[in-house]
Length: 265
Image 1: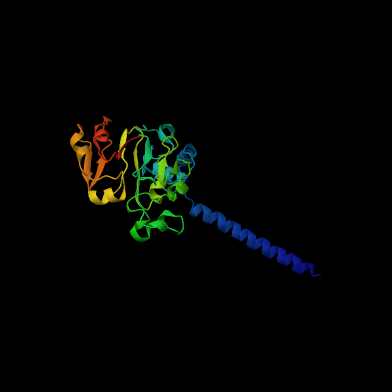
Image 2: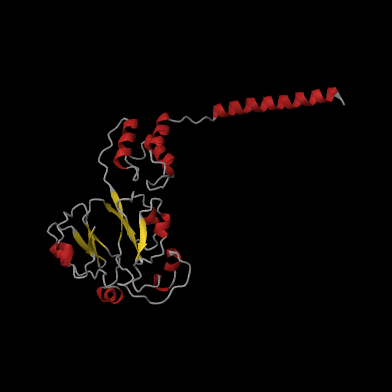
């Protein structure tokens, strides 16, 4: 065994390691990214669901945006007022008003109220079914397909398929928006938790066509508009819509609707 060779090899390896260590140390200092300590505190205050409902890539993404002033301190739809107040305290600002929202499915076309054009034997997936003729087996091309893409997307067990349509549990809903993104029909919207009435239809078909396909579809008759004392109801593209910022929950629109598509929530 050549002792001199071993010593030389050890010296070379040790020297290379020392050089690499020095290089990495200098490199890390030169390219070091300064992090605001508030960012870590805000991240800890957020729920940690990483649902993306705030519009940013997870809670850490929202925290970074809040610290940079690119997002409001009450930007987390899951945490609500409690989290908003905690984040505001970290940032040294006022949280402002935080309005609780909830998802609402604009369809009441259950299995007994709608008609079907054909039997669908494909993959039980809403996006797949929506690509078939008529955008699904149901006569109404705007209605809920009932295969539960929204259910799979919800991390809070707040939405379920009941009698062929999606139904939201308002108490569990955190308004993260995942179900909205998952629905290929654009059937789900966010409305204030305190809302009293909402239009449970999404059809833009003309009245006669709606009546042929669904027993509870909006026909755009505007009776609800004429009977609203606050002008909170409007009809656009043959579909009624309630402005929740104006609605006082008097129920006149629901009482007068001949199709009973305005639901008490």
